[in-house]
Image (tube, rainbow, N blue to C red; front, side):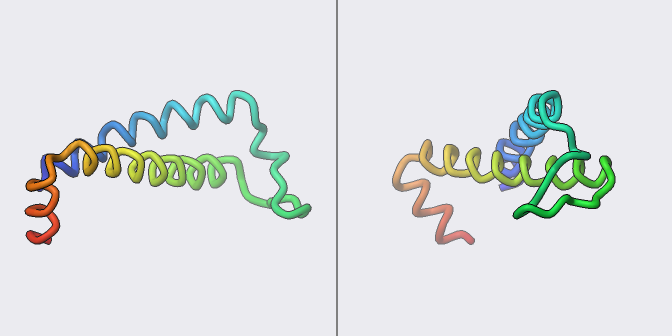
Length: 82
C-alpha cells in the first residue's frame, strides 16, 4: 500500500512544482482577485496555497490513473482491503 502512495505522491509533487513555475511565470500573485475583490495575501502565501491545490488536483488525477490501470480483480481486492 505504501508503494501505491508513492506512485501517486511523487509524480503529483513533481507536476505541482512544474505547474507552479508555469502559472506564476505568467500570473503575478500580487494582482490576483477573487470575485472582484483583491486578495490581500502575501506572495509566499499565494505560492503555498497554489502549490497545495496543484498537488491535490494532480494527486487525484494520478490516483484515478492508477485505479484505472489495475486489473478488475485487483481493483476489487484493494477496495475490500480498505
